Length: 123
Image 1 (cartoon, rainbow, N blue to C red):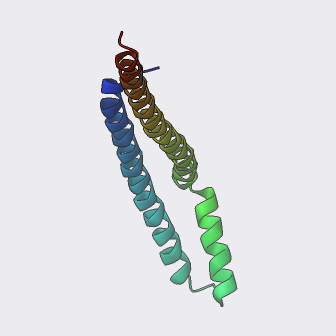
Image 2 (cartoon, one colour):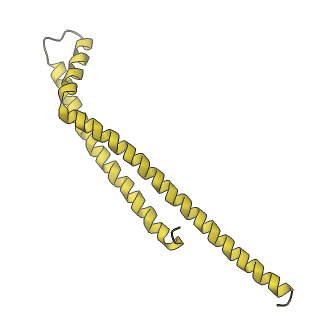
Image 3 (cartoon, one colour):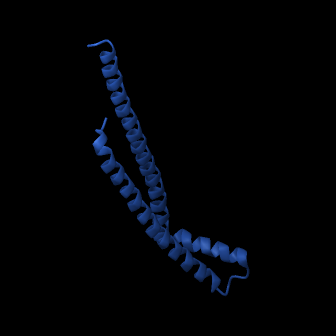
């Protein structure tokens, strides 16, 4: 187990990793939004399309053949899983830190109890 004094730095590092993943997710989401906006624009101004159902189908087709869009969606899924794992790791470290603090307090309390017991019997 990690020393008590090392937990704050490890927790900070894990939180920073979460922030990095969030930043990457925001960038990917902006890219996805841009692709979807372009697909919406292409469908909206296609004079051959007669109704919303045709426009939605055309939008889907445009996005389906856009390899960069598919890569961005894949990246978003990977980052979402990575973020969930990073969050689990951060919570694990926080919980381990809490346990380590409680164990340290228990050890101090036991030492005090042992000391007081020895004083009572005159050792």
